[in-house]
Figure 1 (cartoon, rainbow, N blue to C red):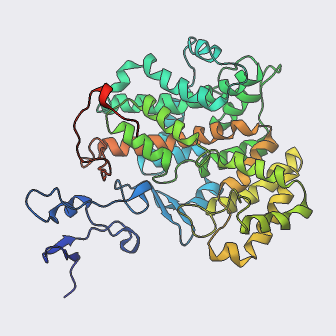
Figure 2: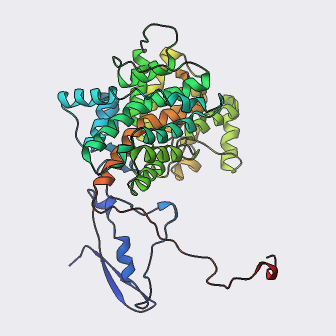
Figure 3: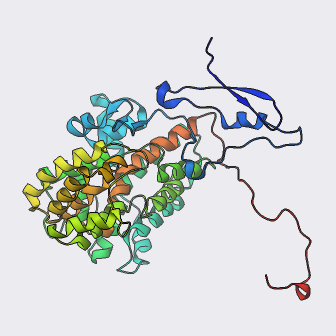
Length: 438
């Protein structure tokens, strides 16, 4: 009779071991063994035991999570079981943020309380302006956001009591409320513009647009098409399972650091060009191509490994990124207001040729969320160096949902991976006068 276990024979000793197999919600995609069970496999009693060696977590689960499900082979992304396509079409970012944080869609009363709690924690302390004044006018806005997120920890020292549910709830309100304000202040600082304080009568996304772009008008009224488009982009970027920045959030939080420092660390991970900076790289690539007639040569250069095709392929998705499909449709709505970004024609042609070429199809290289998002942000008036900041704003709710889940998981301990030591075994100290250069 079949057993839910794995039988391993250690050919070094001839011993046989039976390790239990554990299942998640989807057995075909979530079967695992406990890494600690491998320690049972030893040569002798003095042996530490077997370890798995998995650089970059290519096939290791660091947690159990009920927040986001991805099936990269079939191009599926779900938040708490809801398909991303349905949420993007029918929901709004504040509702999705509640869903990620609490596990269920809110009732009308729950939604109103949620929005009120976040909206009324959007103002930052006046001293935060001094933090921004310490940056040069031409500083990248992402380090500004990272620094000011960490600085919030000093303003709210009680936030270190992460095991208190009331304290956690308050910090969630504060971070979701203030991240838009800090992000907008970073943008205004790079432009040499005065900071704009929040307008609590606007929507979450509408208020963010107000703090970015309000000038001399008494009251800023966001364009409804652009407001809806940015809201959808926020939904698409809200969470994405155990990616680099989310994993960073969990690792820092495992030491029971306060959520502001953990979020700053997550934002620092997002700042990397291999993570949140990818959409900026797509625009640089499209500008380097320059014109439609140069697309075929660029494709040839990619296949000859002389150029990089940015925005294609994904560590998880081996099919068309479902977020990219939504964004591609969204782009046309945005361009009706802003005018067409000429780079979109290059992008569409690049995608058309690549998806007909067996070189890319056989390698399962399809457009990901970064391929079109930067083009939309630029059409709205955002400079490319600001794209990662706009990514970090909606991802805050995903980081916080993952942070809270980790805090409440009794199995989680402070993160401390093992290593495979490859250095010198042992040697004796030599006085400096006896040492020779090696």
